[in-house]
Image 1: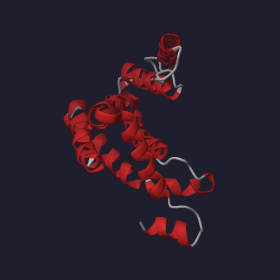
Image 2: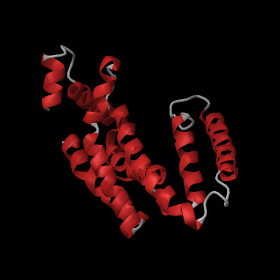
Image 3: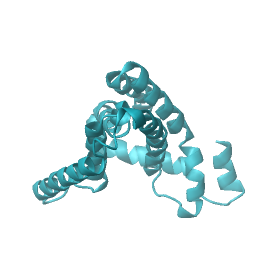
Amino acid sequence: MIIDNAVIYILQKPSIYKALHESNRLLAEQLGQFQFIAIVVVGPLIEELVFRLPLNGKRSFLGFSLSLAFFLLGGFYSLGSAQLDHKLSVGIITSLVFYFFLMLFFSKKRFTEQNRDSYIKLLFYVSTVLFALSHISNFKPLQYSLIWLYPVYVLPQFIMGVGFAFARMRYGFGWAILLHMLVNTPFTIINYL
């Protein structure tokens, strides 16, 4: 809140938090009665598949996670398209090609037991940072002149990402998903009311 006040009063820019609340309101309107399921169930499941699944060091899980991220970032899933079947087909095929390319790149020789731990540590931190930065997309419209401040606004997501990653490493993938769902629940209920 202090940073947002500085944005408003010192930098003479519109509130970034107001943009977040407006973006959440529009999302709630678009999702309607499916808001709770989308934010509490589907969102955490997809985010955990992308950001936490590969934290066990298996290259197939890393390949799947990166392919899913490629599919989502490519916009192949966008609803409202007249050619949704075509976009989904193209998205699935390109994601599969991307997956097999990754499996070739991350050969078994590169993923040995000796270097597995260093990969996992790197993945832990990279996935946590990317998880937090991916939440910048919640602030619409972006104020590009203030893009350097957005990482501060997603600091809570970074801290939660560390917790989710820790739960994934310590207790398993299912617990990370459950924890993520539990964290999203109160915010969705408050936003729904």
